[in-house]
Each structure stands twice: as structure tokens, then as C-alpha cells.
Length: 553
Image (cartoon, rainbow, N blue to C red; front, top):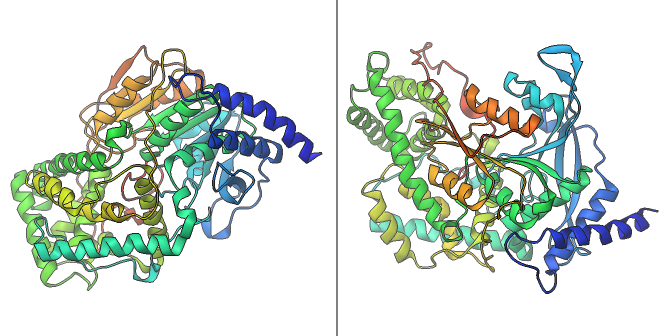
């Protein structure tokens, strides 16, 4: 009976897949092997469904969240070959109006979320339904998260021994010497070699096009004819690929903090743009800290705050705090402040306390925890596998050195750290994909919603403008003069009203709308020796749906 159902479904889904060929591509002479394979895999998933049960104990999810798996082909050109299992989590729609307990809310299906990365897991997304900003959405939708291929328990990737992954304390020169560069090039080569050796021939199948195909199989497994999707950060990129590859399968799509999808920008040039944007956001943090010099004592101007930071970095180079926090750990901690401004009070207090002789807050916020090494190593392996496989990268170190030396003169804060993260892509072993030209003509997609903060550093605002230009009928909502990465379900009520109107009613502004910025954080004085005041960001609550584009947490 199951076999017959699969064969029947395969025929109908293959026709659907052919109708869902990339927008603007014309009618192909014959469907690609991957397109046929996606139809076969989706048909199987529709017939098999997902057997939801108790979640793995280590995830520590509440009993209202149930977990299961969906099988996808490792290689979509060979759908009858090896299959891998993606882990999925779901919280059923509550059906209860949070403003009127007597009113029943009709279910609208599944809302699937990807938080970005590449390399981040979405397994915790269903928990957001308990937050006030999400209760109206959670009343109408099953909230569905999952771990993409390679992440967590979903056929996990690994490129090096997790026990040796954290390198702290470590240096972070903003103008590295030739000897330091040679050392980092050697490490990048070794890392790329380790990925190939530890993963073998399957490594080539971890890329964004397959992430988009996996999303269609998940849609089918959930029993949805059309997909309702919220992608954040990197999740916007393969969401845009999905919209291009399967336009007839789209119901509603939200792109939160959009990656620039221009094929010429994937991924090398996007990373250059990101480094430049982080310099501006670093300046925003320093200006805020200077405004509150009466609280932190780090300087009354942004330049004075910079000198305080540099003084701390130089001191850490001589003697790491707690034996574990050096300049690289300091920089990584303050990089997070570029993603989320609710980190600003914590970071400013930690820097102030350290310079006054109390290293406790800085160690708490900046140290690398050994128990998190395996997850962090997995996240970086997936990040590099996807981005290195997605597109060609410069293969000569001289190109990287030229471009980033030039950039570092005006954007020193993040430039070289970004290089060392991505440099294994120069020496990657295996074929590269050709980036898809993301595009949809008028009427080829239902209206889609793009959310963006004007000063977002991780996904600079020009990415939202470019995606808006490429997807006809899309609507762009901008949070002006703000820079937190990921605005859906965050502190801006105006943004959230647009999100709810779209997801719950299908309503969008005519073409563009803007929202005033959410308030800047209030300064918080020291909460006592060795304390940061607010909860440590090591276990950041999911008040926003976004996760880092480059360094997932």
C-alpha cells in the first residue's frame, strides 16, 4: 500500500516540480536529475509523513514540543541512493486567541523556520510560541524547526577534533605580520584537508541548493501543499533559492535580515561587505558607550572608547584573563555586540570592570567553554562546507591579502577575523556549485515580506534592497537607524505588526514601509564583583529569530 502511494504521488509531484522550474528560466527541454530527484523524495516524504514523539533529552525541550525525522537524499540526482535523516521539532498551533480566551483561532498550517548560519539549528524555534511577541502566530500555526543537513543530529559534519577546536587564548592582530599570515594560511589548508578526509565524497552534497531541496521535502512531509516559511540571515538566501526553484510551492515567505543574493556576491564579496559593515556597527557601540561615560568610564568620545578597548586587548596579549581570554576572545565577544544591541550594557560593563581590575565579567562573557566545543566545531564545519561548496572563491592567497589589506585600513575591527574564518574556502577540495540567479517575475510568486534593519552589519541593508529588486511583488519593511540582526519577533512593535498582518491575514504594505528604531538599551551599572548584570549571552533566549550569518551560536 505504501509503495503504491509513493508511485502515485511521485507522478503528480513530478508534474508539480516541472511547473515549479526556476522563475524566468523558460520551459526546460528536460527536467534536471536533481529536479526529478526532489519530486521523488517529496513524494516519499508526503506518503511517510513524520512520526513525532518525544524529543532527545539533551535538547531539553518542553513536552509541548515533539520531535521526529524526515529522510532526504544525500544526492538528489540519485534519490534511490543513500538517504540522510533531518531532525524536526514541532509545537502544535494552540488555537487560542491570546487576547480573548473564548475565541478559537483557525489553524493555518505549519510555519517552518531556519535561523541562519549556515550551521545553526532551528530545533528550539517552537519554544518561541510562549513569548508574547509570538503568541498570536503560535495560535494559528504549528511552529516547526529543524536541523539542516550536517547540523546537530542531521548527518553531522566534522572537520577537526572538537577537543582541539577552541584555540584560546589567542591573538587577533588588526594588521597581521607576514609571518602570522603564513601561519594562518597553513592552518586554513590543514582545515580544508581535514574536512575532505573526515567527510569523504559526501562533503560535496552540503550546499545551499540542497538545503532548498530539503526544504521542499520537509514541506511535503508536513503535509503542506504550499510552504509558509520564515528564514533569518542565511535562511533568507536558501529561502530565496527555494522561491526561485519552486515558486508554485510558496504560500507565504518572510525574509528576515536578507543576504544579498547577487550571484557575484556569493560568498566572497558578501564577506568583504560584512567586514566593512561591522566597522560601522562597532562605531555605533562605541558612540553609545561614550554617551554613558558616567556609568562606564571608558571615555567621553567614540575614539576614547576605542583606545580603552585597545588598551584592554594589549593587556590581554601580555596576560590572558583567567588564563583563557586573550585578544581573539575579546574581539569575538565584542563582535556579538555588533549583532545585538542588547549585549551593549554587558560588554561595556565587562570592559570597564576589566580595566578597573575585575576580570570576572569579561571572563564570563568571552571565555570559550569546553562543553560547547563539539557544537561549535560542527557549526563551523557546516558553515564552511556550505559556503565553500556554493560558489567559486579566489584560490590565490595574494587576492585575499590584497583585498583585505586594503579593507583593513578603513575597517580594522573585523576584517582579518573574517578572513581567517573563510580562508579554508581558498583550498577547498571538491567541485563548486554555480550560484543560482535568484529572480521572480510579476505574478510568479505570491507577495513575500522582507524585513531589515538599516544598520545591520551581518547582512548589510543593500542585501534587502537587492532581494526586493529581484523578487517582483515583494514588500520591504525597514527598521530605520537600527542595527540589530534579526528583527522578526524582536522589540520593535511596528515590525511585529507587519509580520503578524502578513502571516495571519496575508496583508502587506503596498511596496515599502518603515518603522522607527526600537529604543537603544539602557546602561546598567555593575551588579557586583564578577557579575555581568543581565544573563550571560552564552544561553541567549530566542527573543529574535535570527542567528549569526557567519558565526552561529
